[in-house]
Image (cartoon, rainbow, N blue to C red; front, side):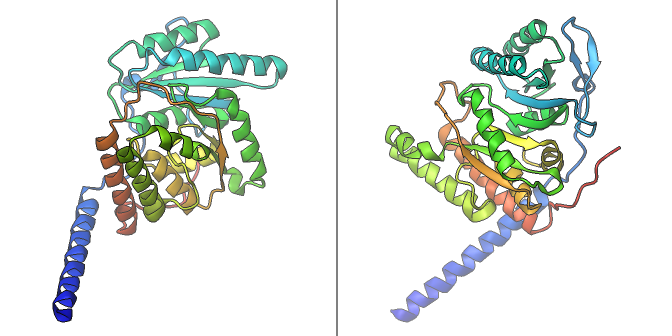
Length: 324
């Protein structure tokens, strides 16, 4: 009996090793090589408040604003106004209190099929295109791809990622700014502050089904085991990066869908960029684009492939030099 159990254990281990080898080969073969950010010709411009085309700037240019806010948006015509009203009210008030403070809000329409761009452009007309810009992508790239496009067209010394649903209270950006400052001195001017909902986990579990709670814990385990250590909430869409940290991490980013946050932090930890995790106020807003089971399954696959592709050398992280 003992011999049979031993044989079964050996067979199981061999099958697991073979499966891992096969998955690693698939991950390596299907990996896409890193290439410069591709832009359709129409994506190289934005419309100013008068409806005229102007060329977008580059993250490799010297910053001319203190803060850039990048808002990825896909079919957000209903939820976007609430977020924009709150954000711009805060930013305008802050600028009145401190005239030296400057900002821009970049709404990236990720190939929406509704009126997202038109809704966002009304804010451009109201506040001016120096403060609000709309980038319209020709086709849907995914949240990570939309954020990357916005980041690479930003002018800020610091760059804030903020979701279009307004789930996070915008004034909490001050908490992230303090978190960044507490990380000083920044190596090579790089640092990241991540908004976190981990402190709200107990309350959220009470409102979720056992199945969704199981999926959540499974995802957290995979993130910790495969990719990112020490960050309890990698998926909160409220993150503040120094310009240098944004250019370094987003220049190496491959994932364009929901798991891009994990790869972003994986890259940051590889480059030893200091990261602060900061508790923020957060409210669940109806209309999420995540489909609970299939989205979690896709993210789980992405996590495994992130790890395997870097482990096998299909993806490589190298020191990047600032472009001229």
